[in-house]
Length: 304
Image (tube, rainbow, N blue to C red):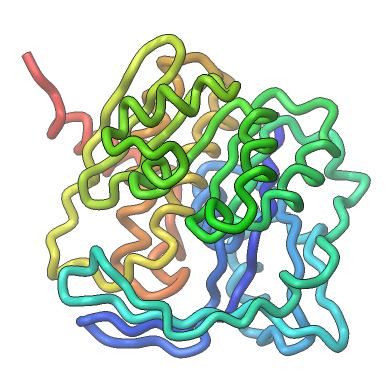
C-alpha cells in the first residue's frame, strides 16, 4: 500500500497561554506528513510560494519518510499563512489573520510516480480541489476526507459531493453538527453514513474520538497529557489523521478492528504534537516511542 495526502502547507504564527511562535511550519498536509512518517512512507502533494522559508523545507525534509516530489514552489506566489491565539483552556482559539496565497490559485499537479497511490487522505482544502485530486487515483483502496466550518458554510454542495465519493469522513464534533444540524455526534455520524461513506470519525479534542462504522462503533479517549504539558494544540487533528492513516498503511488491514486500533495510533501521535510548537513535537518520533505510548493507552482503557 502507498499513502498520499494533499492539503495546505503554511506559515503559522501562534499565541498560547504558554508562549508564542512566529512563522513556524504549519498547514494540514505538513502536520499529516510529519505524523505519518513516524510509521512509514508518505507522499505529499501541495503548493507554496517563493516566500516559503528555506528552513521550513528543511523542517519537512528532516522527516526522511516524507516524499516531497509533489511539492510545488511557485515563483511570484505567496504561501498560505495563518495566525491564531488560544484562550486559557486551549479548547478555544481566535483567528488573528488568514492569508490564502496559493490556495486561491490552481491546485498542484500529481506526479506520475504518485498515480498508483492506494490510500488517499484529503486534508483540509476546498472541496472542489479535494474531489479533483481524489479522481486521479484509480487504484485507491481507501479514501478519507477532512474539512472545516468554512467549506460547510460556503461550499456545502461541493463538500457533499466529496463525502459521497469517499470511504471515510474525519470531522470534529462541531463540524458534524454544523453539517447535519444534529447535536448528538453518534446520530450526526449516522446521518453522514447515509451520504455514502463506510465510516465517520468524530474528533472530540481532549475527549478523544468516536468511530461510527457500518460494522460497529468504537470510542477512544485522548491520551492523558496534563494541561501543563500542552504547549500548542495547532495541528493535533491533522497529526491524528496522519497517525490513523499510517497505521492502516503499515498493517495493510482496512477492516473494522484495524480502524478501531488506528484510532489509538492517531490519538497517541497527536499527543506528541501538543507538547511543542509547530512540528517540533513530532521530530524524532518513531515506532518504538509510539508503541510505548499506545501500550500505555491500552492499559489505561482496559476494562473487565
